[in-house]
Image 1 (spheres, one colour):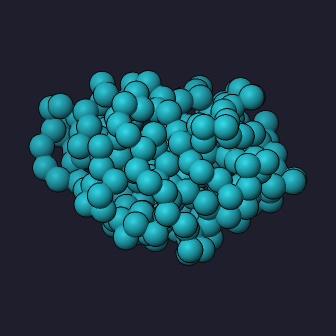
Image 2 (cartoon, one colour):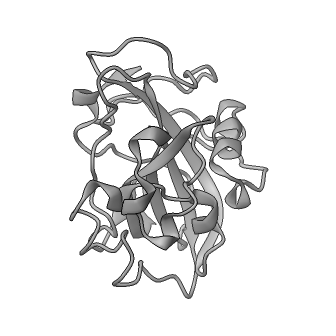
Image 3 (cartoon, rainbow, N blue to C red):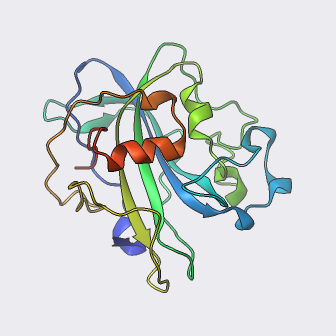
Length: 218
């Protein structure tokens, strides 16, 4: 389990792609936002109904979105464009349980486009207010034009130092240990055999816990 300060900087990502020439898009989503802290009246239509989180009465928050990613020869993700949504480090509130943060790596196909100008997730809008990062629906995103299969994922659990209790998951599948600075040795990747690209957030996290999704953090 990590503390907030350990995740203030964006991690390094490693993956061994089967198609080195492929382009990818990467998301970082908090699946543990209390639904009670999200006011639906402040959300845009595309954020409703509230996106499902890790469990009942939990929703999501978008922390990072980078499109146009490619891989270097050593397997490190390289970005050549500005992020769609700039990195906002994990920030579980004081007094809450530890939060589950999932990194999703999707293939990026022809026809992919960043959010429209009137979208709360548009780069010019997302930092205008906290609600604009709220209720990001991963399954709806996965079904969008230009979004291919989910090829890799990993997660971290982050706790506010002033909190206590246990989160919705733990690093129980032998891939624990990645730090926000990429100091841990990357685990050996294994082939992804599921169809998580079209699953909801809870199913994807379950796939990670079962070890059927390739480790992503380096």
